[in-house]
Image (cartoon, rainbow, N blue to C red; front, side):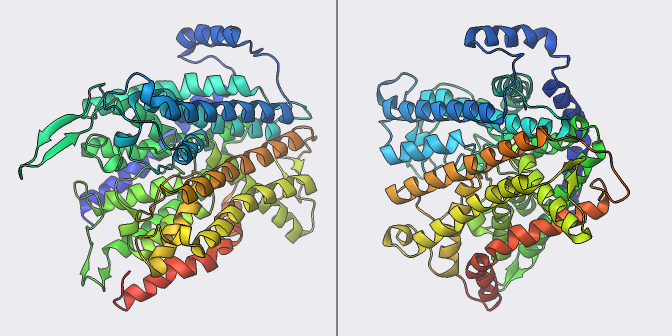
Length: 563
């Protein structure tokens, strides 16, 4: 690693730390309904939106009403994207004349973008028209991200309010998250990306002749607008097949740096928003610190592994599969950030990482959306582990566990365990099914532990709504389209509904003042305990599966064998 690459890492994390309280404070004002510098422009639009849709902004919902509104809205979004794909052959904005999308692929893609997973079993430039990309995928990039932000805002209210019965209004949270946060940030980033050369047009593919005399179709389209929200909304779905490794999506070092920063920007800032909304910024910084420690630790191990001598090739720093324009460090940093943040975009192939680096990227996903995670989803995923940690700490000292002055009781623990177990069960059960059936095994590009890693990574990515792929696995088959789609539904709503149930349970409880026996949750000791619980509960669940994949492959690579 060069000194400039090390300086870039310092600048990346330093800028993330600086921007966290700035954006976090702004979002806290948005969720509290307070005036911001955008209010003179956007408040009238917000009011008109409520009037046109019949939303009563001053009426809040209990957790059941909130959950029903959320599920109905997202299911309707699924059918819109599904229908657009089935009808795109006769719709306008299809200069390439792309045909109707096959039904199981349409199901998978509609599910993927509705759940903020953005798993892609297709090549964007050869499968989806501009109309489908803009009206279907880009819209879902906004509203699926806004859904995650809405859920965590509801959970925060449940924790912060004193003996209430409502946790907010889903429609208001959805509109404000989209209008005040996602749209302005996406507009700014899209303009900057266009200035760097990212494509934004409605032209048909251009025929070009290569130096070898071969004719090649160069894809066109409105890419910059979708790329901005794919990163800021931790969506990750690429306009083109190779995602952010494509020079039309990611042409310069600056565009590369800004897209990586955008991946973590909102998830990191939400920790500060959380601290402000509950009246203790220290609580938010403790969660931020736990996330950052896990990310930097994993990134460091990945970099050490990549820059160490590879016994198979006899050299260190193998560039195969990396982003050769920006170097190994940028490929690994992107790989760590995208898997930690539940983003899914890539500028290199995780399949080409060393087994240890690829295994850590996989572990980032398997831990759930908690190391910054998806927008909103990362924080509510981490708060589930916070509740588990408080409960275990209470058992250790023989006291009724409390968090923010509210007792953690059986219902909260049941819902927290359910939110942890459902995605985990989907990963392991579906990986097992794919590993013992011809339909699952026939899609592998490799055999042995690497082939198993391809399958495990796919279901880890789908069940935890990440969306990145290990590469090598042909997932565009009816078997994988349907099974991965089901995993996405489980991973999204199997967590959201228990989280809202926790919010509803906590909001009605009285807040007790801290006593000498209260376990503090705003210090370094709690951050360390939180990380330990995450590793014990989360990592050990998947240790046997990781042993069969990246761990065995790492040991074999040390002996000079590859797959």
